[in-house]
Length: 153
Image (cartoon, rainbow, N blue to C red; front, side, top):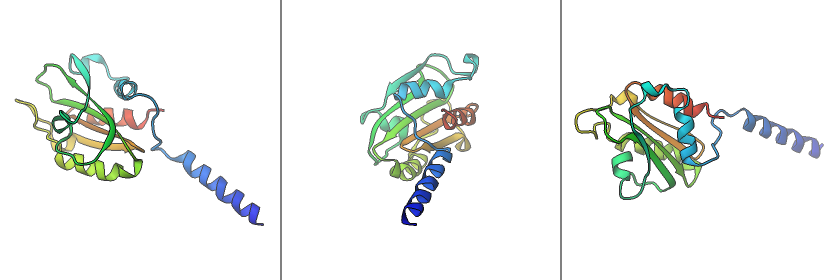
């Protein structure tokens, strides 16, 4: 009877884990960033997008004055453009810190960081999949980029 109970618990655990739609993502952040943009016509994207490593020296520009630690992060923005567009991927040290990190980013990121343009507050989106957090700031593509991220397989 004890073995049957353990077997049922194990099967339920596997079933619940398999049905989760917020699975983590493997691979490099650069590869994941490429997948985030998949399916978006190049004419709809700002020209000359560049992906840069987020470091302690530039993190306040991309994320605000955050206090949480993370393993790595990259940001994708146009080199020169009058379009407010920023996509940042952050791999946290631990998935359990995701809610805290998302809340802090949402509170501290500056959607008016560009000289002549800004992003509306409703188009500043922060979501996660396990230890990976996505920040999107874009008035036209935010929802599409968020959906792409959440649907990467």
